[in-house]
Amino acid sequence: MLVISQESAERSWKLKGYLDDMQMVQFPAVDDPWTFDNEIHNRFDFTWNPAKVFGMGVGLRTRFIFGQSLTANPAYKGALFNDNGLVNMTWDLWSSASAALLTQFDRAWISGTFGKFQITAGRQRINWGQTLVWNPNDLFNTYSYFDVDYPERPGSDAIRLQVYPSATSVLELAAKLNSKGKLTCAALGRFNTGGFDVQFLAGLVDDQDYVVGAGWSGNISGAAFRGEVNYYQPKNNWNDTSGVLLATIGADYTFSNSLALTFQVLYNQLPAGYRPESMVNVYQAPPTPKLLSFAEWNIFLMGSYPVTPLFDVSLATMYFPDLAGYFVGPTLNYNVRQNIDLSLFIQYFNGRFKSPDPLMENVYFKSFLGTFRVKWSF
Image 1: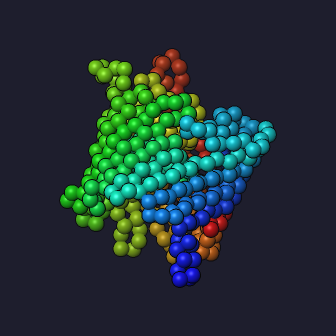
Image 2: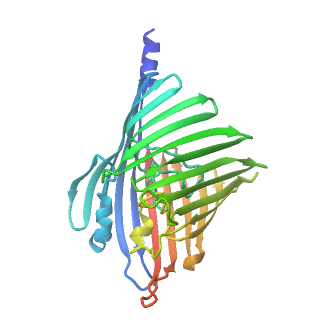
Image 3: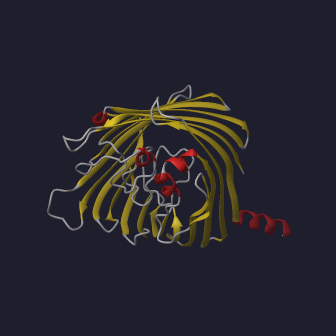
C-alpha cells in the first residue's frame, strides 16, 4: 500500500523545463555594422493534479539578455518588458544600458473538472488554431512564427469553460482582459464530420471588433489539409464596409523517406496606409489577431528531413508578392544527448514597404539574423 501511495503522489505533479544559451548576430544590410547579442533563458513548468476534479499550473521564464541591440534599439528593450496581461507578471530584476535580467510568469492557472465540464481561470494558453504558421482563429494568444525561442507561446489572463458533449466534440466559452482592460470574449464549437475536425466561432476582440470565423483540419489521401477564416467588423461601425478578412489554407505531407513538406497561404486584409515602422514590428508577436502579417498576401513553403535519427534539417521560405519581398530560414538541429540539443537558425528578410503617400519614398528592408543555441531540457 505504501508503494502504491508513493506512485500516486509522483503522478499527481510534474516539473519540467530547460536552460539554453543563444548567441545571436544580425545586420540590417550588407554595409551596416554587425550586432552581437547573447541570451540565457531558463524555463520552469509545474503542474499539479492532486485529484480528478482539480488541477493547477505555473510557468516561469527568466532571461538574461546582453549585447548591442539593447543599446542601439530602444524599442527592443521596451518590447522585452511588455506584459499584455491584465495583471503585470513581468519583472525587471536588473537592467543597464546593454543588459537586462527579467522574469515572467506566462502560466498561472487553476482548473476544475466536473463530469463533462471543465473550467480554467488564470494566465493560460487558449489555442484555437488549426493551421501551422498563421492562425486567424487563435483570438487569445497571437504569436510570431519568427520567434524561435518561445515554443510555449504567450498566455492570456482569462477564464475558459469547456463542455464535451461527446468524445469528438467540444463547446467553449472564453474571455480575457488585456493590460488596457479591453475585453476579448468568444464562443467556439468543434465537432468531427467525415474525418475532419470542423469549428465555428464568434465573439468580440479587444472591445473593438466583432468577429465570426471557421476552421478545419483533416486528411485527404494521406496529406493533412487545414484552413481558417475570420471576418472582423468594427463594433462602432456595424453598417459600413470597413471590415477586415483573414483567410488561410494549407497542407502538409510526409513521404515514405521521412521528407516532410508544409505549404500555407495567408490573405490578411491590411488597414489603409499600413506599414511597419521597423523590423522590430515584423519580428515581434502581432499586436492583434486581425493583423497577423505585415504583408497582405503571404505564401509559405517548408521542407524538413531527418538526415540521421539525431540530426535533422529544414528550410522555410515565405514570399510576399505585394512587397516584392521574401524570407528564407534554414534550420539545423543536432541531438547531442537525450536532453541536449545544438541548433542553428538563419533568418533573412528582403523587400520593400510601399509608401501610402506618393510624395514619400518606399521603405526598403533587408535583415539577416543568425542564432546558435545550446539547450538542456529536464
